[in-house]
Length: 140
Image (cartoon, rainbow, N blue to C red; front, side, top):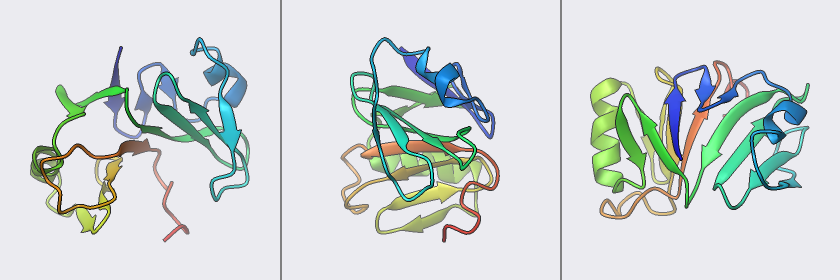
């Protein structure tokens, strides 16, 4: 399955604002839940490579993808694209892309990536995230 990101709306059948019990029905596996800096535990669906991050009301606020997930946005496969190509593609869509040593965030488009070493441009990002408007407000 390819997870298509829809900026500020969600990814695939996951819609931002949906409650945990609704989202869990989309997966064939039981998630492991863990604390991740928010008041609500994050669900991790390991076989799918999907993390679902919830706000304080238990509503989906962001979705993060890791291997083996396949992710696309704007009709382009992002994951597992080499980081250099991914960065160039997203940079074309957002001239104000915020970059640092562990990846980038496009506030304009509601997408970002994390990698342990952003200088390894031939390697894919470790994760791709999509998020709702305001997700990073107060977190930085």
